[in-house]
Amino acid sequence: MTNNDNKHRLTFEDKEITLLGTAHVSKESADLVAEVIEEQKPDTVCLELCESRYKSITQKNKWQETDLIKVIKEKRSFLLLSNLMLTAFQKRIGKKLGIKPGEEMMRAMETAGAVGASIHLADRDIRTTLSRTWRLMGFWTKIKLMAQLITSVGEVDNITEEDIEKMKKKDVLEMLLSEIGESLPELRRILIDERDQYLAYKIRTAPGLKIVAVVGAGHVPGIKRCWNEPIDTTALDEIPPKGKLFSVLKWGIPAVVIGLIVLGFFHAGVSAGTDMIKWWILANAVLAGLGAAIAMAHPLTILSAVVASPLTSLNPMIAAGWVAGLVEVLLGKPKVKDFEALTEDILSVRGFWKNKITRILLVVVFTNIGSSLGSFVAIPLMARVF
Image 1 (cartoon, rainbow, N blue to C red):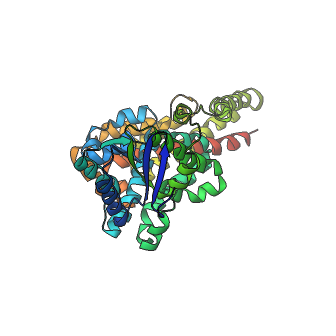
Image 2 (cartoon, rainbow, N blue to C red):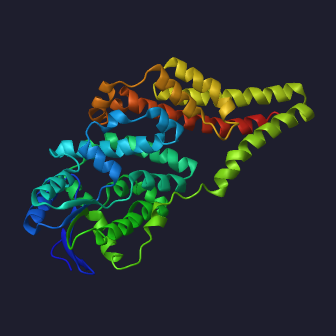
Image 3 (cartoon, rainbow, N blue to C red):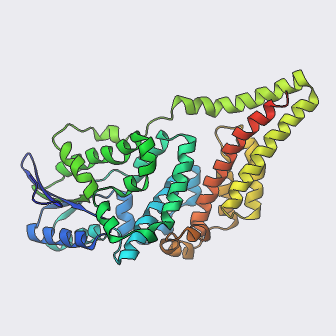
């Protein structure tokens, strides 16, 4: 079944499949991919790419079509920011080692075209994977994830070629989130195990009788393990509903706050009720404004966060970060040069704050974090008034 550490022979019904395990930032992997495809001349080449990642490789100007207002309204700011940070991590490793990240995928596409093979995308949409991961996490885990992603962008300079060899045994997402994964094993199930199943199904049902599949080496053991198992990709593509606890908090916190204020006025007097309102406004306004300021938002954006947070925190359907993000877009809509500079700017932590696109996403995320913290800080301060 296995020829060597990176090349594996599989069969499914009347199909012959060569599974290649690669590192996404390894020249040797890129050379192996081209060599195998040229040698075997398969009917189909399967790639560990989803449609959006495929377009980001093949359509260099795709970023210029991004509608940031739509991203904010659809609550996809964190997902887009996370995707950019993961891209930045790979790009910096590739730059350090003199290879483009994903070069093995590009070489696979080029070589497939040269031998007349069709391309088949086998990975689950990155947005689905990140959405399923996001739903699993609690508030503090999300903050920890955000910090880890930002920190990872600046830690690449310490990575050696030996570390790259270790990466061949892990998925990039798994490696970046390994610390969180230790305390949240369900994370690995979504990031790795589910995608192993998805990849196995897509590869074995790809068109053609002779197939070469190019995947990260970290996925090879899992793909082989579930190769002959029944797999329901519809279930793997579903975005799970938000948990009951989220729904309780979503509506419960505003109810508790309003209840406290009413009790304050009726049982402790006008002065106590007024103090409660003051603490609610101050805690929300200050921390939401601080979040926007940390993201280096425009002064008017910071002001909008300060004004919106005490109100939006009482309305589960609106978030202060969305308001601040929309204001930031309107005050300084990204230009073509911002999209053109994006691929270079995301290579440094400073660049994330410098580029208008990523700064807007940071404004949304940090303002929302500040506003959420404000609600948790405000309630005990309000309760002390009794």
